[in-house]
Length: 261
Image (spheres, rainbow, N blue to C red):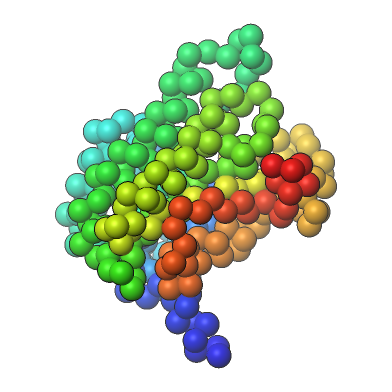
């Protein structure tokens, strides 16, 4: 049985691209893929952040980085072009790069919408479109290529004054369903993970000021750990998740259940 379980979650021979992979949830996913045997390319806006992440992640497997600002179509296309120059195959695309903006309703600025929607919604769309030739080239009915979008429980429930962020994550959940229907016929699955609270730069202030309250909001009484995020990503990317398509999976310890979302 142990050998069978290893086969179910084995990513040996797979190549993955994880955006926003230099820290937080993206780095958790990249580490999980490496531990499962995949080769991983991470991308981030910060070249220095990429270098530091590669130095850490390389302890766990073969990893390289291509810095990119994925808020524009041109940068999304450049990332895939540079990836293609190095790698001939792409089995797993994780659209994790994201931004948030918090401000009171009366003060919420145009930039708070433009920046967040550009990177959280348009970025995953343009990057997935640019990556389609690579994904289609490796996709089969028995072993589909995978697109994993990182949404949020904020796109399911009611967050605090993060209007554009919540709207963007609801949009990425729906885009996931639309693409799952279209790309499934090409043997590419598209699913989304909707994380609850995890340690990340985006969550740092909230965890610092209200960490105990946030942890208590989950029936499990804690925030997410790196293995929690790595586990669901490896599941979706491996044989174990090959028949899952169009799903939005909350990874929140049950917070959405408590609030009836």
